[in-house]
Length: 348
Image (tube, one colour):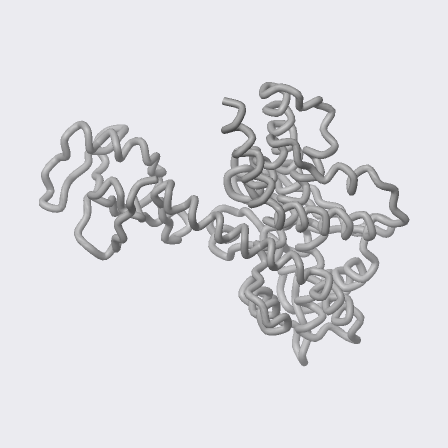
């Protein structure tokens, strides 16, 4: 692992200028960079649509590039080693958050039972939908610029009632079409109240404290922090569910897992399944959402097979049991992976 250098995009760096169908790359003095530096920059795969691009002059800088995307948001490309450290901290934190989910869900159910549509009930509905439907939280910039939607930017037209279900159809990030069905009675009742309301604009999620007011993403994250006292965000639900889905898919794989090729096929199939729920690609599911320890443990023969194959009285009971099994497996990961590493060393 490289010794990283902390850098700031506010310091002097390199930039790029469009030339024909591509770019030329310039140092801080406006001089074209040599071929070896250009190749390093190309290896970063900076999106062509980014504007105001800053490029780190140092190969070991913890930030490698910064730019403004088409939605006007500042985006960062980090050194792979920096991202690996950050990702592990993220997954460790999400695993800790998961242990609090039963209490969070109990609080959500209490707020869903409130009369009327105060802010607590409306935001609790959003969190319930995040938990059941694996939605992205949503961005006003993406909705306005790209016509792509997440939970808090959905409009009334994106959902309909079908018997006892809610059926969501909408275009999400990267133009991916989503079809999500929710059959939770409390969520159905709350969403129907919002959908049938008069006033408050076209946004689906809204609360009423004298007048109907549309909800935004910041309300969801504020609600989670204030009511739980924990560092929980909307995205944590997608990350945790992706990890649980991957663990269950690997445990229930048709692949025997007795060869490297078989295990690779199982992982590929599991990522496809996870991405089908998240509405993204298998590559994004694996790189950004699934805790890599789940895959590492599977490759060393550790799964949650007993929890997946057991019989349960209800879907909620099964979900809770599988989540607890995943939590236990992740807690044991250092010991399990360390034992496997020592075994491999002894057999060489």
